[in-house]
Image (tube, rainbow, N blue to C red; front, side):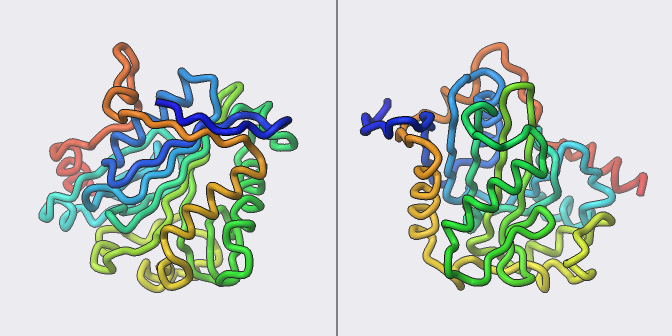
Length: 258
């Protein structure tokens, strides 16, 4: 059901969908389907996911990125998503923001990762104005030198998606499931996960972050709140999703081969 709102003259329309606690795999399935089938602009905000889950980029290799012995022992789900980018462990303390845009509706942004990242950095500058020395740094969102937002993208001929996992809070012990990646940003300086990341809750309330994000998006789009049934919307018959849960056997084989 669409919630009618006054449209801002001259701005392209963006549908805003807000969820709470939707499993990250369902969210990824919805995102890919909207990217490839819909012709509308979309913003999806999912405030937390249901359980700790590792999410890897499209080309990520479990043996290089994960402490597979611990992952298997503790039965932590591992998902390979349809976009690029790095590896993150998400849980109820993670807030997800996804932007799916028609390239022609975002003037000045070229369909390349660096251009999209630059635009998103300016958008979040408004969200974090005056808070925590916010910067876009080597494709990460940081306060000072500590990361709190990881990004991933996918670009098609006419559209692109930019999605972010914001660490509003996290369990430090869960970071032990992740290895230090071989390819890491220079500013990381070989710091462990616990030394490298920070919690957004130390800088601003969760609800304020979400409200400010919606407000910042409203500077570029006429935002229209839409209610979606994620199960119905994400599983259109005949659509093959790329994001998937890795099977236990795959993880065991990766462990044995390493």
